[in-house]
Length: 315
Figure (cartoon, rainbow, N blue to C red):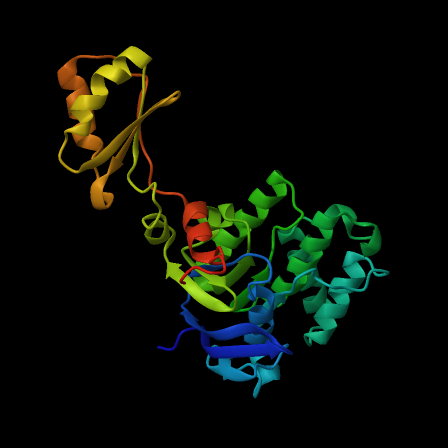
């Protein structure tokens, strides 16, 4: 069975700038893919090419087997796209705008009204349905953009910065909605907000300068962090000083660092040394406030794979 989103060898150049340079990936039903990268990495350009709104110089993208460039009408029937900025007619109200989108999608009468009402309810727009879009907050404008993407209940969703400008409560609502829809759709979320990955994504791709530099589940990417399986022990300075030499001698421990907030145990080759540390603490009969295992930090991995190499250094 073919993937619901198939992206193969996309390239796009703007003058001297190679914005996207050979990006390929597939997304299956039930996957929520976080598409990450620093500003200017090529995220939005890639999203536009995937959806067929921008023709690539090379490569292709298919939505449920339909070529986004050669079969744009058929592909877009199965696609919901929330672009960067979610453009809309600002003099319209959310109700009139969504009604207009329903008509463009081929819905009329009772079916159009039902779809508009459902999309507005799912994105919490009822309180502002009759207010001009131009007067809405940035968060509400993003909700209007999301509502139009959901209106026809598409099989594939491409969402460019869906929580940009939302407050923490609104972000939670949108992430909950994405989680509810995920089992029945293929979803790509373009973002530079790393917390989005842990919140909703089953997989993440990081791009830099138009190329994929990392691809894996959140756990797989976190395992690439220098903090993966680091153990932190919190106790009094006297207790930490007593424990440090013994922990340093444990099998699998690379080094131990004493700091003002505790003792940090860095494992060799990412080994799990949590249990040996706990056993040693019990054997010593000392009291500690906390022993904590870190799974890794996605922001460390993000910086490692996206920070440009300084001039004069080998890549």
